[in-house]
Length: 418
Image (tube, rainbow, N blue to C red):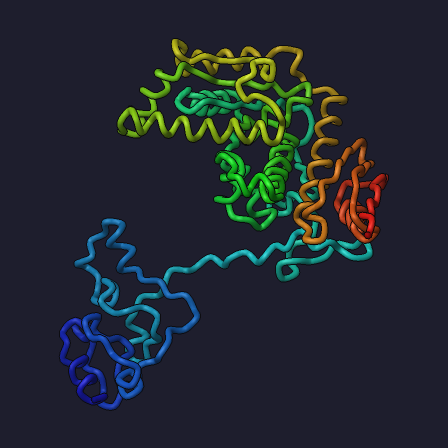
């Protein structure tokens, strides 16, 4: 059977159209895609049972997808041979060299606390443990450009042109427009999937989710990144609870962009080329989820105008006019950063880092601890069920960069035994 298979492969014009015939007794590791070999047949023909672990690119398929002229490529490059099998001499030298594959970053493992106060090298010993901001090369979530730059926090209704207004404002000011980066960085920092974080931000919570701690944990991950981006300055942050999280910071203007429902439905229909009923369902689903999450985490009404410094109705305003309204507000002297407002933002960032670190640790993830920070001093309050949990919370807090002192006011509540 093995000799019959070898003869069939040698006679196939697609297999050896660009090279000399294979020597007898040596079968090339490429076979016709139309031939299906069983395990005994592959053993008899000398075909490896499993591909090697090393990655192998198929440039022929990539060029066909990219619109290149595949007729100028050889059979091997057009993808006629299955990829993944090592090619023995002499055809090894005839194949084009695969494109270099960028190495994947090592696992970060950020929340393994260092022992003895020293930095622990994680991810293969190349990145020192520094908590938040490691992926961007910053210590303690800081940034080389600290200080006196304004941050703009915005939220919008679907179809209100809020995203485009935010991007226009960022373009005119030379700021960074931040939306998806918050989810992306939070997923990388805390090693969770982006889909889970988006669901915690935009989807309405289910019945069983209300009874658990997962949504609260993911919310704290997102909140830590919002404060991290805000502390960098020169950013327009769209959504992700930024208007509510940054409301206590006096130099951060909070802006809401809205429009009547029928106007937004029409815009969504034109943008996505869908029917009115489908556009209405999209708007209701998105805004219902955001409204439910705001009520869950902040006990507030997302549409309350008291929560915002400016509300822009785009029913009759153009994109440019809406951006100009935002720019006029930002230039007001009331929103200039001061030492007190910068310190307030730094305290909120440090408290958010501690809360996120507690949720990221397995031994403290189910605890709800009240964390306050002021000038590097962290105060812990709440109740725990054992002295071990009380010590674990303090250990996590002390292990984070930027924490100078910890005041542990946690109470141990022992359940009475019958």
